[in-house]
Length: 340
Image 1: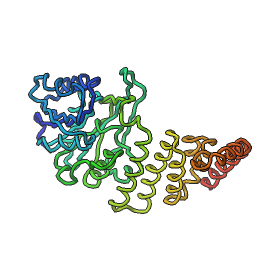
Image 2: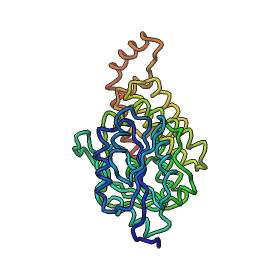
Image 3: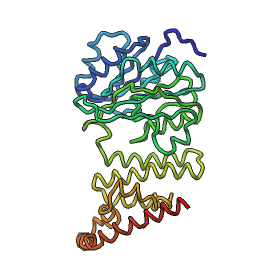
């Protein structure tokens, strides 16, 4: 068992024009019950008063790193390489830790040397600090197979603590991914160690219009890119590849649709069906995520022929009720076949 006495932790924070949130985030770190930490803040090319504020704190445990704008993954990597503590915790510049977050995770890391990553449960909050929902995941152990279904362990990198020994094995975050760089990192880590979690709320993750998640089209592009990277570089079973395709491509299609990029949504759905033809019969997911009417926009969207679009919209009105009925029948038949 590792030495539990006042174990040092490196805290890694990327920030980009986040002065609106930064003071509360740093305050939540200063309020931790575990106080043996160093905070490495990588300023990813901010144009606000981030540098002035951080240097004005006069806190010896806080280290300011400046770099040109390269993205959150590169900023995290700068912090990882600057530190040397046996454990590393990540936090984004707009999130909030509750006081025992570090202590709770550190305890689990020290209890079992086969654990290389610990996450926890969290609230989601808006820009007014109002709780909008919570995420209470409870998965532990060898989680590679689970992670092939999607990022099932943490809604944000702010929830993760890892051991530096695992960094020595798997390296740092990929800097070429637009979306899913944390998920890909957890996948990589899960091939070499067990994962554990703190079974209580230990942080609040902020969701607001300035966040990366707000750029829906960019998120969709990133999911397609993540699918291509993971399936080309990992040794996967057929079922694992299908899981990853279903997660990345289905959600990418949903995001393309939400951002009105219907042609991209259609291409992505076709690509998904090539990877996993059975996805066509998962009608509950499709109707919940898209509804029935939007199928027409996805399947028949044609930016080159406005007239065709108008004709298809007329056809849509005529066929909508018929297709609704058809989907309901197929859903019922699918459930009956599964029972048999």
